[in-house]
Length: 180
Length: 125
Image (cartoon, rainbow over all chains, first blue to last red; front, side):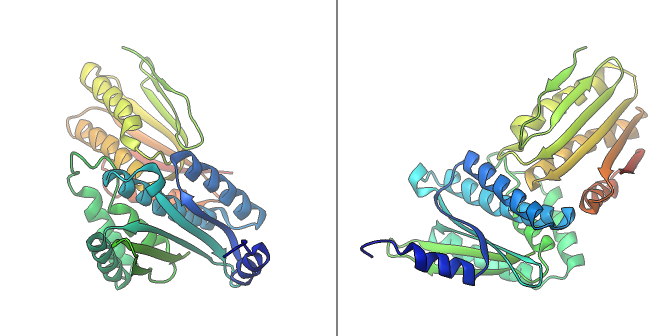
């Protein structure tokens, strides 16, 4: 592309009802700043406080998972990139999507895990969540990793959808979509 | 004896532990990237309080959104309280929430399920 066609991008964003999107290296402070913007947008839309908290929570868990993954794999700052999109549906619900580059094997395991979560009903998800919460923590893993995906699945009003696409670098682009 | 004072930020709660009165207050959102850096200080303080005094300990919580790593850390604090309660130490949790946001009450409710000490979920307008 010789010049970025902003008009075409704008048309696409509007068509898909995208209220917020980001693509690039993501830092801790950027997660907070974008999160702030998201909260402000939701408030301006008069979304119920509990629903706004669910959308915000899904966004936080997804982006922090991406940061933790990049950090635990020793990815350089420029490799710790995320693609994040939040859209609002006509029925008032929101779609939170996030993607990142992962090792192929990790990506396949993640997709499998999410497909397994997608089959569970709310009661089963709650039981899985509590079980995961009580699991002894890995001394090296100082995060709530693992719990985040179940938490997103619990907040979602539809089963989570995950996909993995192989990239030219031999890695994969993993993406996760949650309707809240 | 010492007080615990941690100022809040956008992503971390304001925390205040008063040794004299035995009241630990936590207010605000909690979604730091690494919750344990923050909550380890709380866990240390609660452990010391329970070990060094016989005074009752009350948690006054005005917590809102917790990310999952904060949920784990808060659960660790409640586990300490549960252990103390079983050993006869008087402990209690009062979790205050805005009645317009029932999600906070549901979060508190799930913690309550695993606790046998006095645990109140208190709505306010």
